Image (tube, rainbow, N blue to C red; front, top):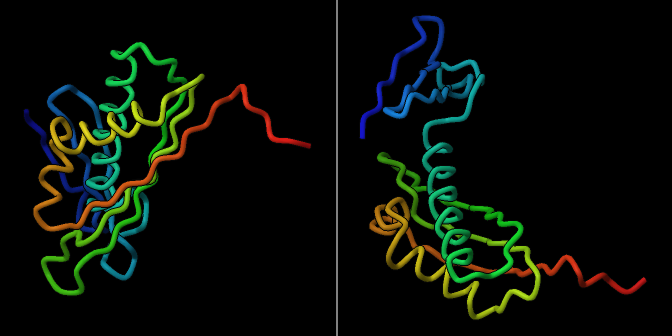
Length: 146
């Protein structure tokens, strides 16, 4: 896997990443840190990548199990150390998985498998951060009472 990062120049802290698969991502810093607040911070992208990694796993595991999954989102809430290096110290993953008749055990097992076996990003982050998880299952056929 390869990635090239190029600095946007002396008027800020904008960086452009080109991945080995040919995609582009931009990063910037806060104004107080010399940036222009034009793009996500690098640590935000690290957190987003971790969320994407685990959501990908959960959907794939459920699809392979022939479950009728139709949606998956995960909200990550993270805390960082106060001193440099300001590593993540706590990350909570709040999953919302949508689908028809999804068994809670299957969804929880998919989340567990992602974090114990498949998600490379969370495996690295668990070296410095306490990882916690919650799961909400939404069945689109169940309508709330009026």
